[in-house]
Image 1 (cartoon, rainbow, N blue to C red):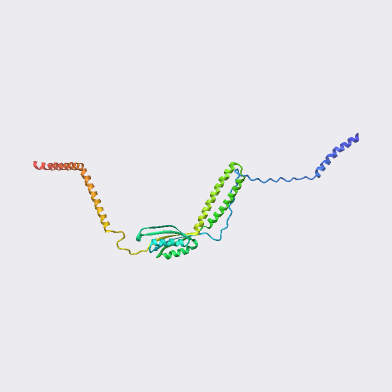
Image 2: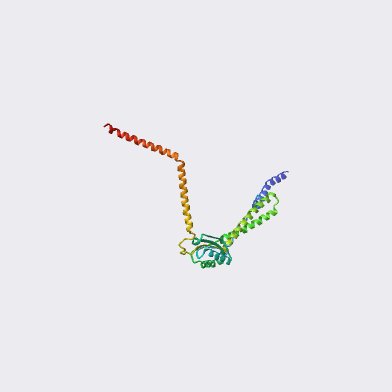
Length: 293
């Protein structure tokens, strides 16, 4: 029994030591920290993605230039010069924008605006100078629209890409609200596309066809001593009409005076009677002292 008790006491002391040695000798396993998952993109409530970012467009080497001119020409005959300028514009492949002639004789003036191909701009100016007796003024202007045109091209590409996105979403949409929203977005982007195309067409037209405005003035001459349109009989008739108008006015005044004569005649009679009575009283007052002396 004593031996069994000693064995049990020894085991009570040895077991904790063995357990401690095992814990110190065992390596600790370090678990790696969990990597956070990437955040999922938040979908748009409507399910419609926004338009893509605009892509930069390279500037073309060939510049887009608008060239216009304004001239004032002295010509022999205004209407004939106008017709020659119209024929010139048609011959160069252009057209007349507007034309106007006013006045007559030496006072006749004209203005005509034409559009001609830009590559024939200098030729048109030279032929217009040849039509005139002399050129009193000439001015030309140029405008570089390359940057605006390139920007419109970039906007058009991005708008077309956005339209394709909306069409793809429309094929996948099943909810009625989503379909209506996509249709509304498509309408807006298509309206924008039409506006961009219209502006681009306008820029293409004004750069391809130059505008030339021409003022026409007749050549100065001595002219007749009597101005055109003057007539002796017309002058006599005008004088007679003036005299008749004066007589009518005078007769009208006399009629008015005659009608109102009782009123103004009575007023004049009373005024005259009162003045005469006052003078008589003054003369009597002045004669009394002399008679008493």
